[in-house]
Length: 198
Ligand code: MN
Image (tube, rainbow, N blue to C red):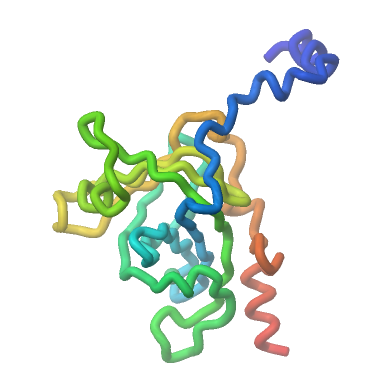
């Protein structure tokens, strides 16, 4: 974008509105939820969870999600969690599986955009296909994401989480490092840890 364009846009009060595509897929209150926990267990990681048929289907993302379509983030499918776990923040006690601090790093609703051979697929079908496409409406993450199973079906748990190249894609953002606070409690992982030490 050159300087003249910037000036022109700054002077045009309708520019931003006109330039921004309508959120054609904005998730409403009937849509399923997603949550991304940040979890400081034996290693710091993110847990990405999608509501599919009344449970939270879950993946560990060691590096966390990216807003850059050039990044492919390893996502290792783990055990499903109950829906009630979506709002969990706090400390998993020593001696229990996953001991360590947990915050909700992002959450919101999402839309299923999964297809196969041009036909719409339910989330459960897409999970079994090994290719889930979602449109996230979170506090930090927005827009299209693909989860792609990289192994032959059922042989391993490795998937890739990839941002789709849409108007919410942004290679310059790095919310994993610049936006550490929970959108529900405003806490960081450090806040959760230090609250326990008091
Ligand atoms: Mn975890």
